[in-house]
Image 1: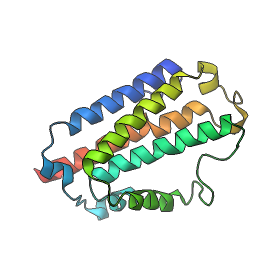
Image 2: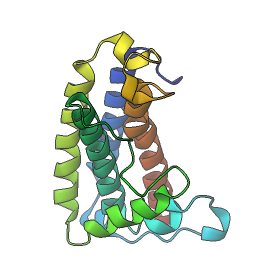
Image 3: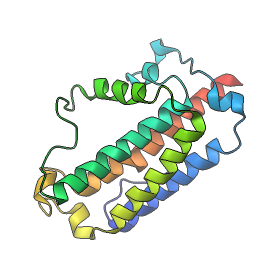
Length: 177
């Protein structure tokens, strides 16, 4: 599917990606759900291949990026203007933030991570529904989105991230067979 350019496409892409992720996870055995990733890192680009240790780490990553989006939108709507990434992070060093987000959930179990993700997806979708197409996809419609659009942040935190998670989990499962 092409990158969404309308509210309707954004909602559909996010929900479809989420549904595919849930369908992939649902039949997994406890051993598959909790198994350790063992990717050949010499063949993979991107720090995330070494960062995430298991499916739970992927789920909490998705959840935490939902939290970033939810908090960013709420704060900016309340006049507490700040960038999407927390203080101290930018698009060059956000990998360090991702490691901290993962480590924050060292004691989170798979089932907890799954429930957190399910609930945060619902909140993100409800928030997306609250905006107009123009607010989501017109540059400058919301001054706190800078040179981007609010829709881009939603896409990055939902459908694009779900595609990434699906790819990673499928690769893990394929390697177990």
